[in-house]
Length: 110
Length: 114
Image (cartoon, rainbow over the protein chains, first blue to last red):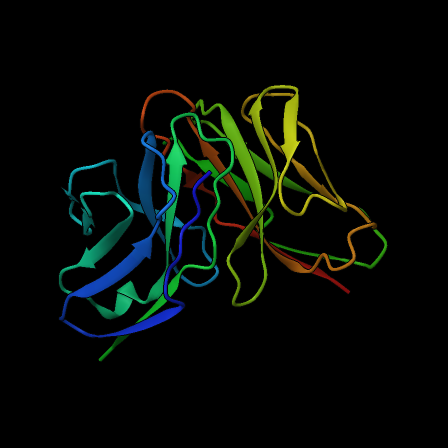
């Protein structure tokens, strides 16, 4: 399974866009990119996923580069409640090992 | 409503005792997973199961055991052989069909061994 690399921490001003990068240079053609976030002492929460095309939902946007070796999660207007650890993972169809890594700790500053 | 439930939320045990953490899902998911999380760390995979009566070791299986007698249940036993059992334990489940394998997580069990 491909693994991912994320910066350990980032800060973002409240109301501004938070752009969280993820490198997945060994991703395979059948692997999706997923983003989750974990607020302190809770289970991770699904945010968004994609294969090739950029995706948007009510929580965030996902931008995947054309070569699929990296992606960026965008929170368009960060709030204090978006302070969490964000995990980028890649999973093939029929995944049997969800490798999470250490993620990026995003702190939204008032 | 469908979901995945872990119990209890907090658990205290004396050193040397085995303890079993419960994980139940009513999502009809095929695969289930157990993770361990230590303070300030990411999630590490302990065991996973893709089908009833079958399971595989993850990265840190030593000192743990699991069973998968029913599709909806995947209990984790922390044995006395686990050297540092105090941690936050998370259970997850996924479908294994189609292109979307979104994982659903329970709210976790915080185990403290004294």
